[in-house]
Image (cartoon, rainbow, N blue to C red; front, side, top):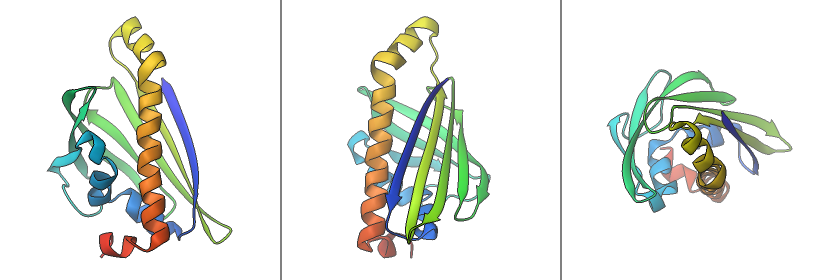
Length: 157
């Protein structure tokens, strides 16, 4: 299983960071490069416990769907998701929020397994892990920008 760990300090409250991280609307803005959009389940607003969303996006020139479900939520400190259908063999994403020094330390632990046996492992090592890391960093950069500029007020009405 591949693991990607990211940490980012955001000059905003944990509540704002938590809510932006579970916003379907902001997710679609942050993944515009891959034309990601919610097509089933929760398609706008904030994800809640036990809800699912099906994302449609274009990765590596191929239109793909990924359905994830929120497993557990502890408001303003933690939530996690798991893939219930999609291209990965398995996928789990943990989100942590810790108030620190007047802002929030936002951490992601993203774990996945690739299908395809040895070919999948080689593809992961050569291409996929870097691709997924870049995607997650770009998404977190958008969360940071929206949280720190006050634009969050438009998204979290």
